[in-house]
Image (cartoon, rainbow, N blue to C red; front, side, top):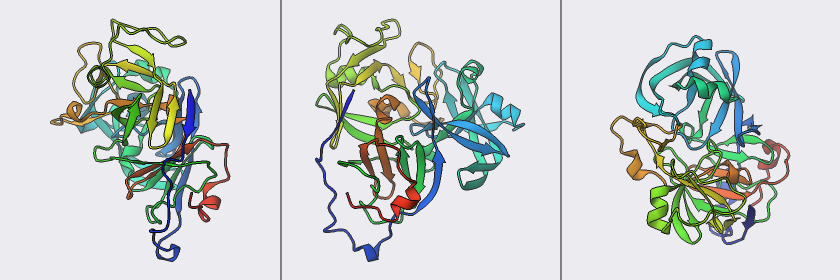
Length: 337
């Protein structure tokens, strides 16, 4: 996979307010990201009622969740949730727990709710105890620095466009839609416009089979690319190598995209179609109608350095660089671009 950064969009400051009229970046929290090498994912430490646990970092989910085993270990009683979630294997949960004390980095909170996921086999295999969803914390700006392995939280009170404080060659700026709790962006896949979400909770980049047929004219009869895993026609899973995945100046060269059925929401999984476990719906939501065409997973995202500017509704992207000095030192003198 090749990542090409083209300076297609330059942030100019001629029309931006004078520095005296707006604030520089102010960091509020910084959390260490711990790679899960076996799965290509990332987790973060979080302390629940005085006990440190490891949670999957998930930008694709709408709810924070906890394994039933961890909830029982911490003696947290389960309550009936207004949400219903279904994991990859069709196990449904409609319960949550309330945690008295939560510590994440330098931040402390009380009475936080976590949806319970109830697949004991999955919990036994995975090295994390729950899922931390950034979708529940989009009142602050979020920086995902996979090069330095940091999740940084910034105040939204800053000059528009003045957020890329780290050394970089070029910056892409992408409009972002957060109305449904996901980080939804427009992308181009081999020249075709696609609606995608960023999902650090997904190992691979996935394209909805129905949308692939409708928007790209995909046929399973097309030969698969070498050096990818095999097709699984029974489950309708087809890995394919494309020429380019691009969004506003960032081009991912020769990405492997897994084409397969996708289902969002809380419906019971009655066949081989995948229900995305970190997604959740209100009982009367019609989430599949509004669902994205594509999920961009960690096979792509780990090569990027991203800043989510919440009030600007923009995503700033550069290539992931070498580990940098702490953001508190750098952000005070954030360069323009």
